[in-house]
Amino acid sequence: MPRIDEKLLPIFDDVLRRNAGETEFHQAVEEVLESLGAVIAKHPEYVDNALIERICEPERQIIFRIPWVDDKGQIQINRGFRVQFNSALGPYKGGLRFHPSVNIGIIKFLGFEQTFKNALTGLPIGGGKGGSDFNPRGRSDGEIMRFCQSLMIELHRHLGEYTDVPAGDIGVGAREIGFLFGQYKRLTNRFEAGILTGKGLIYGGSRARTEATGYGLVYFVDQMLKRKGIDLADKRVVVSGSGNVAIYTIEKITEFGGKVIACSDSSGYIVDEAGIDLDLLKEIKLVRRERIAEYVQLKGTGAYYTEQGSIWDVPCDVALPSATQNELNGNDATSLIRNGVMAVSEGANMPCASEAVRLFQEAGILFGPAKAANAGGVATSALEMQQNASRDSWTFEETEARLAAIMRRIHDDCADTAETYGAPGNYVLGANITGFVRVAEAMQAMGVI
Ligand code: GLU
Image (tube, rainbow, N blue to C red; front, side, top):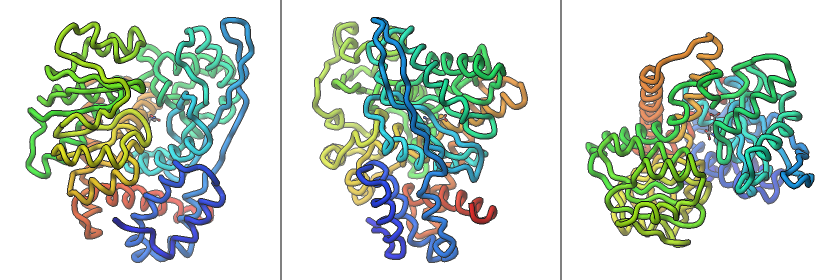
């Protein structure tokens, strides 16, 4: 496992000092810096011109109060964030996350990752992320709407088609984007479709955007396996989570002839050896907004539910962590390796702890890092921006074909870069270097920015 090059250690120390206590941000920066040793040997000007320091420091960080009134008439206060990380390649682009765990460190790690992910798509989008510590669980539609409206009262002044374009992430889907867009439109008296992505189809959304992250993940895994001469068909697959990413990952794996036998939520996991019944899963999660445990009740026979425990103890050929950061630790990795896993690819952002990534790489297991493997969502957001800018609307087939081509290109770029840098098959290195060099070259061209 590479260590941080000693020329970069002072930069990392500065990041630790300046962002004290923000462990997820430290983890994301460390992983990228570990990949850059060979890059700075080839491009010493990146160090001389302080490009790496600049890339590790967000361009702008906004923290604000979100007051709103709940259904009982009680005033509630949440904290809102938008970290505009890097705009060298295009307007800041990245989702909003509503979850009680959200704090500035989480948003910073997500914005940092997003910058390289967006660069990997090859489309003109910079990196940003935002959200709130608001917990949507158990809240009525009215409460969600009032919260979104209050958030937008502050956020709207920071957005713009050429400035910053948010979308969804954990806790933010079509319903929330609708409330946010409606409030932006009232506040500005302008129908600017390109200020948010993940919009409903009826008012400027893109076909295939909902499915894009999950579908893209499967295209990426398929490419990794194909390169080794392995077919996805008939593989046993475990997908953690049961949100937007997990659901459409399961859909596409099934289309490719694979069988997803387990998925989860934050309370526990279900196993169904017959293959997860996707219609039932969608009904529970998307329509009823209930817990995954319901699946076993409604399915009747053949499925079981385990509260707590680790989904990674379920033997599988392919593991796709698609729930949240650091959900798969060193012990989980050991268990997957012992049970013969052949490929692991990240649907969520940074779901594998550093120790787990190290163990997979040492064991020679194919490993697809999030910034490459889950880039299909934001790539399709960029396609939504293209359609909005040209006041056009493409068919599902056309949009999905573009998504598939983008994922293939991301895969090939990462694989080629890894090979060029003497580490064939190391997609972590390939993704970090490819994304970093694109951002660094753009910044270099623009002088001291
Ligand atoms: N939240 C998604 C991500 O992590 C999508 C962001 C977007 O579409 O802007 O990439």
